[in-house]
Length: 355
Image 1: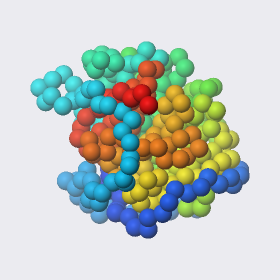
Image 2 (image 1 turned 45 degrees about the vertical axis):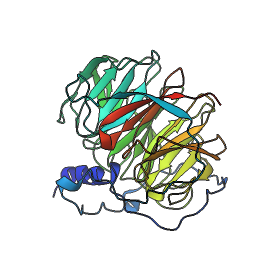
Image 3 (image 1 turned 90 degrees about the vertical axis):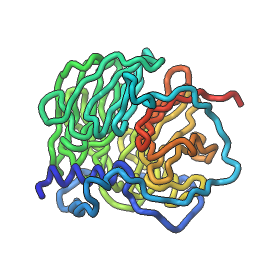
């Protein structure tokens, strides 16, 4: 099996919910401050990807887990729209994954198997779409993350093609960068993109267990972290997002936790542990913040979204009964929440409730 086919199977298994059931419930870990320096990664530090254990028909089957939920979890949002539920309608999704929202509250989505980007109005009207399966400019192979810079350019990460593509807001191709590998500027499945105030791109690099930094033209700038299980290290990082203070939050999916860094890679705090309770995670995937700085994390294997205060205190569980393997999530300027309900092939829209 060649590397490209192997990596596509691995990402399909892991990105969309094939991590095993877990044990050892623990309480939410207290934040710990452990400074680290950004460390360039070496090839010797990379463990080879394992052979897949499931055939294509099993790639998108969620791992069964307990249906019990923590008592007392509050509902903070009310669902107000569901996109893609009408098979005869103009809107449909094939494993929606990433979600980004521009300055006009237009919504952009990626589709892991649909291999396209769709752009919608806030009311759910399809405005444009682009992409098809392939490796040429403007084509996609398992696109995952999507992000928008300060001037409206759209960046899409591809786990299958191990690269980042840059487009205009209407889908006109501008450039691409990245290739399969372990060297600086290369990826073993580019997953999710965060953009800082200078329009630099921070990209979670799944198979290499690191975050890589690029400028808006795709020039490699730096590597943050390295693969491993110790605090400050990463195993299969996925979601990545800056808070309003310029700190970088990374979903450390393989270690079932969320880590907080400075933009330079100094570790500030670690939250979470493996499990199904409040403040615990089973395959956390994406991360975002509301206008108050509260943190929201999607989980594939627990099929829920958890909300935390800016200090990491558990607040609520959101929409758990509706979701199946949720991935991307984003807030618009009014505070409405969009979630990619990947397993159900839908995008759900929620309205925040007054306290």
